[in-house]
Length: 196
Image (cartoon, rainbow, N blue to C red):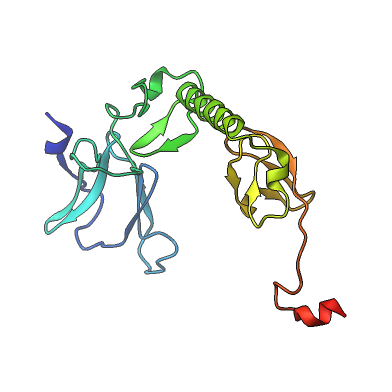
């Protein structure tokens, strides 16, 4: 039977209960934050890819795997065991030797594929910067954080507030940012006062 055809009654949960949340695969009814006086109940589905849905006659485990359902979910919350695969190479999560840490459109990516794609992006950015004649001088007196090696634009979120260090997310270069404020441009003084 296809996972899409699964509809398993959950007798432990009364039909009148309406407050259910999810925490990963676990479904939680009457969580402590509801404060409704009903007992909190936590249940895991009989298999991955199912979640609890309320129908008129009670609660049932039904398919919630977007891949089984043919939905284009950019970051699926839950997938079934069959679709629990690297989006790039297709390796099943159970075959991995280390935990995947990279969420990508449609699911996750194994470390091998992530590293390979990161290195390709890094090499392409460094080559493009070299071809454009990019140098550290292009990074001075600008309102953007520009990597001195690959010319990628970083964000202020990338700055370590303790020492103003930045690690470029494209080429992994560490560099220090020196921030200078122009008080006239910030509107703290007018430019005529500055000339005096």
